[in-house]
Every structure is written in C-alpha cells, then in structure tokens.
Image 1: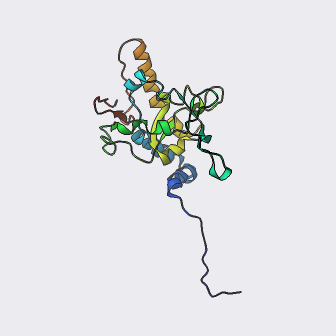
Image 2 (image 1 turned 180 degrees about the horizontal axis):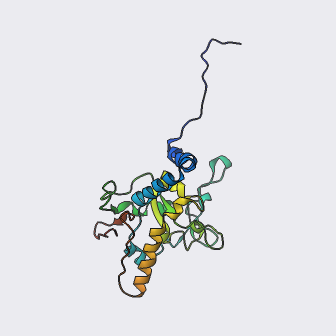
Length: 219
C-alpha cells in the first residue's frame, strides 16, 4: 500500500577514517599494482617518522615494563571492564599501544627535504606501527615484550597509511627496509666505537629531535 511518503533508499555510510585504506588496498592495488607500490612507498618514506639512532643507543626498549594486550581495554557490550595498566601474568603493564603512541609528541620532526613535516610535531591521527609483524616462531612481534617497544621496530605513521602495514607479507612492510639497515648500521658502528654513515636515497625517513639536541636526517 502506498503511503504517500517519499521513498528513501538508505545506502552505506562512507567512513572517512577507512576510505583511503580501502581505495589503496581494494582498488588501486588491483587495477594498477605498480602505481600502488610507487605511491605507498613514497608515502611511507615521506610521512613515516622514526626516532633517531642516538636514542636507540640509550633506550633500545622504550617501555621495557610493558607488553601489548589489545584486550586490556575491555568490552562494554560484553561487560568486560577496562584493565589498561593492570599487570599481566608476568607482571608487565598491559598496554594497547597507547604508551608508545604518545612518546614522541614533545619532539620535533626534522626532514629538510620535506617541508610538509619539517619543524613540526606529531599531532592526532598518528599511530605507532611495528616494522616486524611476526617472529621466527610465528608469534606476533607486537605481543612480545622484547620487540613490542624495541626502538628499531617502531615507526609513527598516519593512521590510514599504517593500516596498509597490518597485513603480514603486505608490500607496505617491505618499505621499512631502510629503517632496518639504518639501525643495524648503528649497532655495528657502536660495537666498533666509530660512526658509520649510510646512503639510502634522497627519500630517507624523517627523524625527530628534542628542544635541546638536534639530530640531522640522513640523506
């Protein structure tokens, strides 16, 4: 029976927080894989932010007292309370990435070749992504207390870009290779008590510096 009221067709709501991710992963990757690789590589190396190697020498583990536990925030619908910060079975601080996410916010990003980010601070919309997703035994690296806050294993990325790195074996994960070379080189130079420079191209990732000390970006 007609009611005389206009018929309204309700469609899906577009979620802006996921739109770019779905475009890259479900359309660009399928239609033009080479363009996908070029764009994603440029975005990660141009917008990703790493802590300086000098910080790694002093603080290889940023929060050694914490372990990743995504379930620590509970679930209101299921009546599970928020237990963030409560100790796990080994006594470590249960964290959902919140501790790591906010560590660099007081530091200044430095990358002279990228005026968009150079001289700024990380604000909202960035997440701490892990370079290594899996360990050799197949377990999750973010859930291991030895690699959860291991400084070479961390890069801060815009949230939608970070989602492209969440899949094991995804192309975006291969873009972290300059980071691995960089910190490996610093470890080797530390053992030999000498500095070792790396040439990794003009799009080397951004670094951070504090108000008192400046770390030059390696190019």
